[in-house]
Length: 184
Image (cartoon, rainbow, N blue to C red; front, side, top):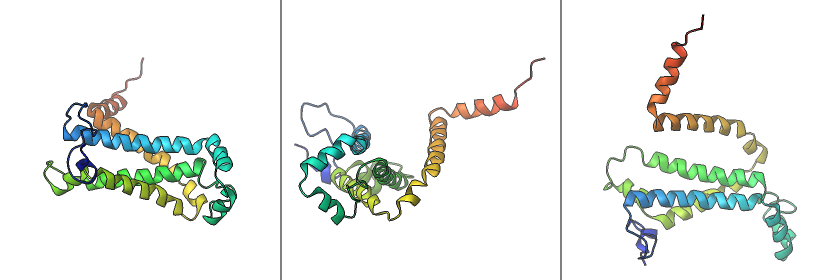
């Protein structure tokens, strides 16, 4: 077992010898994608009304627990779309932090590159802390009114992604607009 990748800077080979050896950059991409998929699955579970109903029937003292943690009468702050927004906000903050953290890394031998390519268990704890910390945002209405801002940022991200993937697409759009000729 290669448990060094969980708390150190060693590259993960999926903790088993039957998997082929992979490069460090590939394992890093895989682990970040795995974190993203994990949070997405948790969000899908939180949106399910079946999960909320099953929690009510299977957890003893469910109503008292919900009142004790101030999550509403039937823990409506822990399930539903507002909870998904908060978890996704924590995930976005996590990835944005690492985006800023990895700017101008030129090689894989720097200190920041070691942190970027390893310490997966500590990153998982940080991701869980950021996702759960978003539930302590006091005013739900202020948080949910930011959806317009999030849609604008998503559109900006899609535009930036298009330019990164195909830089000529920006040039072709601009020249097509300026060189447009009306048919006679």
